[in-house]
Amino acid sequence: MKSMAALLQLLFVSVFMLLGCSDSKPTPQATSGTGTGPAGSAAPQPAPAALKELNLFGWSEYVPQEVIDGFTKETGIKVNYETYASNEEMLSKLLAGSTKYDLIQPSEYVIEALVKQGKLEQLDHTKIPNLKNIAPDMKGLAHDPELKYGVPWMAGAAGIIVNTDKVKDEIKGFKDVFQDKYKGRIVALNDSRELVSWAMATHGLDANVVTAEVLEKVKPTLAAWIKLVKTFDSDSPKTPLLGGDVDLGVIWNGEAALLLKEDKKWKFIIPAEGAHMYIDSLAIPKGAPNKVGAQMFMDYALRPAVSKIISEKFPYTNPNAEARKLLTPEQLNNPASYPDLKGMKTFRDIGKMASDIDKLVTDLKAAN
Image (cartoon, rainbow, N blue to C red; front, side, top):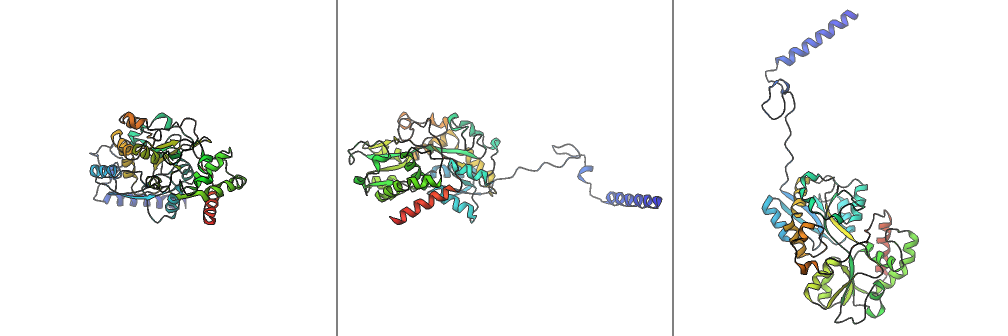
C-alpha cells in the first residue's frame, strides 16, 4: 500500500507540474522583471488616489470659503461643506451613518470618545508634513497627545462679552452676568456641556468630574440662569449683540474677537470663577471614502499663508505657530483672540454623563 500511495503522489505532482508548465503565459515569478521590484516579487501597488469630492462636516462660521476655493483650485477636489452648531449635533449625524463624511471638526473630548469607540482613522503623518507648524503648547495634550487622530484647527475659551455702553456695572464672572436685572438681555451658547460647566465653576467643581449628585447640586443654578437668557446661540452669538437684542453674555472667544474689532465699546472677560480651553481639530471618521483627500486638506490648511486666512476671517486662537508670525500686532493683541490659556484644562470624555447633561439642560429649557 505504501508503494501504491507513493506512486499516486508522484503521479499527482507530475500532472500538477505539467499543467503549470503548459500555460503559454509566463507567471510573474518566471519573468525577469523590468519594474522597480526584484525578479520574483509582486509588482508594487500604486498609492490610492484622492476622490474628486470631499465631504466636510464642520462648525458654523469656521471654515473660510477662500480656503475651500483655494483647495479646490489647486487639487480639483470639490468640497461639500455641511455645518453643525454643537458637538452633540455632529455626533448624532455621524453615528446615524446617513452621510459618509470625510472630515469632521470635533472638540477635544469628542476626539477622545471617538477614539475609544474606534470611530476615527489614524493619521499618516507623512501625508501631513505641515503638522510641524503646530505650536508646542498645542501638542502633548491628554485627548490626543501624539496627534494621531486630529489636526488642531483653532482653540480658545468661552468668555464673557459686555456692551459697556449699556452695562455700567463691573462684570467679572458668571455670577455677575446671570443676575435678575439682566433678564432678557443675555445671550449664551447653545451648548449643554458648556452651560453646565459654568454652573459647576460657580460651585467650585471640576468640570470633568460629573456625577448624578453634581448635576443635582447645580440644577437650581441652571434653572435660574436659563430663565434669564433671551437667546441661546452657538452658530453666531455675536449677531444678537450687534443687533442690540442683548447686551452681554457668554460666547466663543473668536466671536467676541470680531466684536472687539468692530467697536471699542465691547469688553471680553475670562470668568473669575475659571474657564476651560477648547481645541477643535480636523479628524477623519472611520471608513471615510476620501481619506487621501482629507489628509490633503489637512496639510493645505496647515500652510502658514492658508492658516492666516482662517485667523483673519475667524479670529480664534490659532494653534499654527508659523501662521501667527504672519499676523499683525493688532491681531495678536486682540484679548479675545489670544486670551491667557495657560493652566486651563480641557474637557475630557465623561461617557454616559454627557447624555445626562444634555437631558438636564433640555428639560430645564422646556420648563422655562
